[in-house]
Image 1 (cartoon, rainbow, N blue to C red):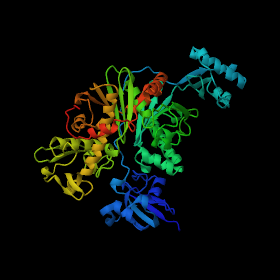
Image 2 (image 1 turned 90 degrees about the horizontal axis):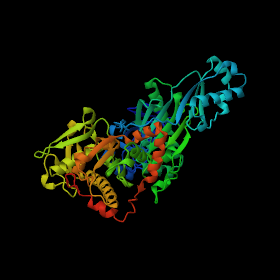
Image 3 (image 1 turned 180 degrees about the vertical axis):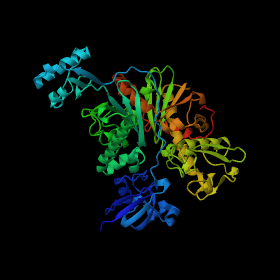
Image 4 (image 1 turned 135 degrees about the vertical axis):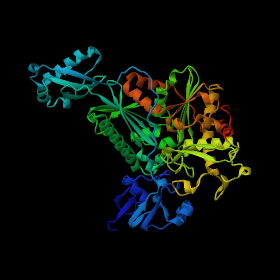
Length: 614
């Protein structure tokens, strides 16, 4: 095949075509963000593109997936191969949008006790005659300034001593020595430089947030966030696990794109703060168990099959240089422990930051996404479980669903008389779709005005301008094509209702079983963590009967609790030990095999507005 080029627009990315590679694979290899929820299996239909040029033939399965769009020239990027040079237009709904990324989290006072410390030494020049003598001088000075030298077992690698005599002479005997609190030396540099940096990383399925921290003051210097580049390989952890299973080479690839993203975010954070990334000496990383395994290049296949046991669950320390090359040569990464196959270090971090191990009353901690992690904490016990919620809360599998990005409807009110909707759109522009919080808001309103029945369907007797018959049955019209940014009507279908119903039923059932396990009928506090929880309206959530045993007044959004937990662990050794204790204390309830789950799930399907009561 002669060398041809594929032009991806509107990105303006020109890439060399490769024989037998799909357009999606070419895009993934060249940093072109195209949605691929199913991991490129041709099932989700999210990678629709318009292609000009000679490409592989459209088969019946792809045509069925595309529906009417096949007649408009659309193709699935994962099923299409360019036979010659081609121009590929990636429409708005198929792009990896820049999401509104939640970075703020719960804050509380704590004792600053980092693992890394900087010692400023003065070595008399007249005492420096031999390299081995210099080592002894440094050790003596470290014992003096530490004032508790008997607690340290100092370790000075020989590589750090090379050429030090000459460098020290130029600095008039002044040295900065960076060590761990166990006494291992990470860096020796001439002159006094007390700067000591660390990064806390919240490695989410959809987003990555990096917090640049001053380890001496505990101050946040900069926060940078980006979409997790793994999204273009599969939107949820199941599709990424399957990809690693079917294509073993993809495990390394998925890890590498995350490393590159974290490194770039760390560099950007340092540039914004006006500090040198070479002063980054430690990172703490938290994420769900699948993200944890892929990050560590551990086979995640076991997480997708019973009994869903992680390859490892303890806290881990590794060298940071392969992950964050811009950091100091001796920098290290600490990863908090995971609890179970679908309860990861991010949940442990959230419990840590929210003091879930120190509650005085029954408290529920929820982080709802494609997978829902639920923790029920009491003074005596901490229970946790995970629910296979599906992607509805993030806009997935919804006809006009999207993540919380500009153009997404995130709040709706509906007139009880005319059924006319009033929409709030992120960015205040024309609506492109509806995100998870907007979906819950809309359905809650439709339940309240009687358009959606308790059983989860549209009430046909309420047909009007807005509740109408569409190609797939009854649908509710939010905005006409003249008022959207897509040029098509924005609607909610009965299939969308079903997806939300299943998601909220899974959450309701999981909470119900945890409450039953501890013989609790009422919750005094509900803490909603994560992006979806932060933007979810508690009134709307109760309006669709999402949470049992709860009143609206007891629900609080707490922001990025996982990120806050990562910061806490970065700044304090004692908090790391506490995180390990929390993970050991948590009791995991496996819902998939629970004898009462199916009954609880069916009971939780009702959309009836409960006013905050079960």
